[in-house]
Length: 272
Image (cartoon, rainbow, N blue to C red):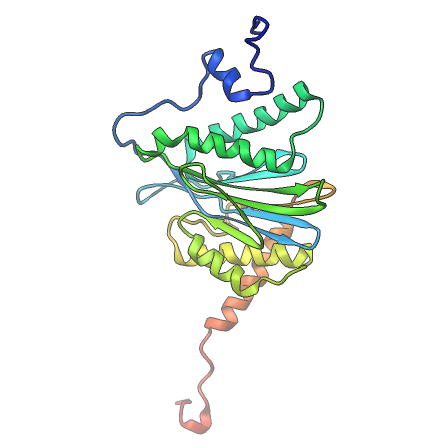
């Protein structure tokens, strides 16, 4: 363990601790680097909290570089992070963020407020700006249950670390336009947990249908999006069996919608 002189202790300031022990995180890179990118993630509020969801595909140019990436990750008991952008720096940022929250709780004896967590993540995104200028952009979503306000809350970020709280839903990644449109049309205030999960998975389905960088459900390999809810009871992942059934219902709906009607014999459409 590092030892600090009185007056030099970084305390609960985790980024400063990393800097003083020589682990300052993301350094500036030179030149463009071709790295796997991850898309698409959504988060929305419902009556008892928030639901977060993200597809599993990572791409490098036109290639699928990874089929089972976990883009939605639990940050602590009452919050989670979803990432889009360069996969490597994004996963490193999540690990550091998880460690930072744990470090703060151990030093201060109490967990950081939800707004404080959102601010800490904003600082980490801002710290990644030199790498982002070289193409390794990381744009997370942050969501959780605010125990002080007794409500679920959503936060989006820009590449400079700008933090924006959203009231109803938010999406990020290359398929975010399609996903957010689906949620915008289907969103209702005070939805149940079940309805919110249905809306989130349908938004990912439509995003995967329109965006080649977003992966849909892969029933052949048993790979489904990561979906989880956060309520006053904490983080709760949705199981693959549950998701498989929800996607099966969506596929049935799409099949009915896209199947052309049978020819009408009265109109001379039956040549038999």
